[in-house]
Image 1: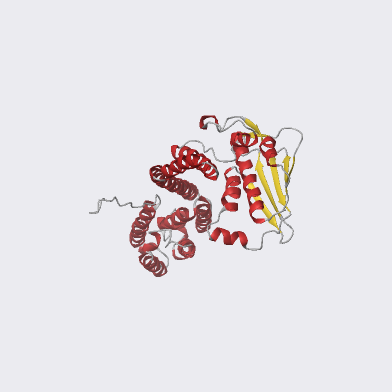
Image 2: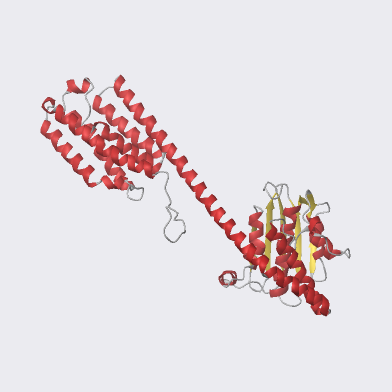
Length: 407
């Protein structure tokens, strides 16, 4: 349905809502059947007044709680317990108000098939495990009422047990499917928003970066360096907008470019496939204030994973240069273990005061959260930060070899 504003209205429909509505109707219909059955056999009961009293309570309970099974929010665990208790009391009370001959002959219990509604409520609310518990209690009550496992009793017990567990399992599958659908809709909405932002970026930011590059090249000097950086960011942003691989800093080619005079690497040659030596990407960081140590053999990772891990190391070293102060030293340790690759970045700076990272995230400075932890999270790894005021900071980056990105 579309309102007059022209925008479609999205109505969210739960996949289990029809089951709750069906259960509401089931309880009302089965109550009518149980009342009719009791009225038809009224004079055959040993204590008909006792049976009539129970049927009155059952009718009042169903009338007062008919809307409790219309939604999962109203159908609480306490209500289900009380509902199932009333059903079990009715089954066991049959042994008191009815004659042994009628019970042995297979006469219906006082609540009759209304009892199935209590079990189905457990199945829809809590899945097959709740259904198994509820149907088992009903089965035991029926066996106690009958006194012996007669064929018809066993048949009815198994029917209720199997059907309720099956319905509970179906409900669990339906809920899982609903969560998957909701996640897919969220991803679709995020993709649409990204495309909208990409159009805005393409129409504004890219043109500004291109203009800065041209003007900086024309002015020369420090402006030329600024223009070169603007050109790199334009290429990275344009690649991201186009949906391709992002040639951000941390890719293997960029480190090669920084280490040698070969000049800029064309965008088409970035992000190669196949294994890459992580040690070769981290070695260029070594210098007067940075020490690098690693195994004597190559530490191979897929190029994308190696690039992201190297970029996280670069971000950690940037934090050292920005916050540790002049004269601070840093050490990079690369470890190649059978199940993971571990890179540790340690410095001898003043450390990070307690609460500093949380304050930075609240203020929108997301260097550690995104540049380091975000990259490792995307790789299926982890980033642990240990800092003691006055004793420096240590960042441990771990990428499991079994992760999708690291294979």
